[in-house]
Image 1 (tube, rainbow, N blue to C red):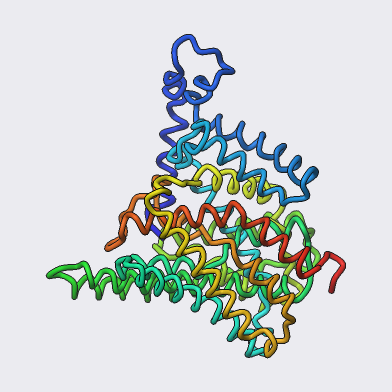
Image 2: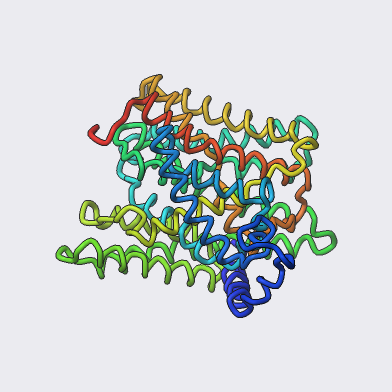
Length: 437
């Protein structure tokens, strides 16, 4: 994660709040307040707040009329307001909101970690093999096929590393809404957590090799610096996550009500995320590990309120609206073949890995198909947390612009349909319900 992410976003937020009048000056002269031109020139903070209100209404309507997840309505409203359609808000207008969006991601990632049962991975070694295989084979498939079709090796490797992960925010949002229980749901949680960790590690390893490949005469020192940073980030994030879990265990009391517990957990998450940024660690890795260790140490005594209460739910709506606003299909005609390669190779990699360990890990074929569908949403978390702004600069060493754009488009498409695929897999194919044990 970019160590300047939160500081840059906070500075942007201060600048935006200090000059609200300057934003309104951009409204065309003589335009009525209700016109599209006036909305485009309005204060982006006010505009995004209004869009969130519309998204909540749209999400409820989508769920009531179509039985699709509310998140589809949230992202759809964001996409309509984005430069893809009405251009009400630019992607860079989200910069002042970045600390809140990062916190929303952190809340869902911590909750995901708290629902992972490490003992299950130890007891069922074939499940562990299946979880590792679905991530690694998806990444290798994307890397190999992109390279076979002529993509630069470094760019193909980065695309493969990011393609390993399933979106933790989509997974948790759908589970909050459908409240499914069963084998497929539990495996989805475990695999999403594990492939998110592997994706972070793979991106760090990629940066080490990319620094050595493009460093020129100083490639030796660049490679050593990148390697040292990778070790520091991984070890430091693990220790910070462990400290978060221990502190949560110490402060947790059996007689504390759920409201105060949610506030306590949210406060600890904020502190951990800020420390991770201050110490140039990975908030994603720290919070995920923190939730996992907290579950292992506290067991059933750990009660994590979904989305950590009402505040977390509001942040989640804002996050999905922002994901719609960040949707991009720019340059699709030029890179459509790369987009197709990424999506198909990733799906085949995950599907083959899950199928290979279906019987030995104790899963049926119908459940296996459901799990593959639920794993399809591609994670934009690494992209959301890797830059200080939402302009998506191609500042990584050795990355090809076309492959980078194809990766953004593939992520956009898989996230827009992701909630539908996850719900279909869990509810329609696997047939899991809230009453199922």
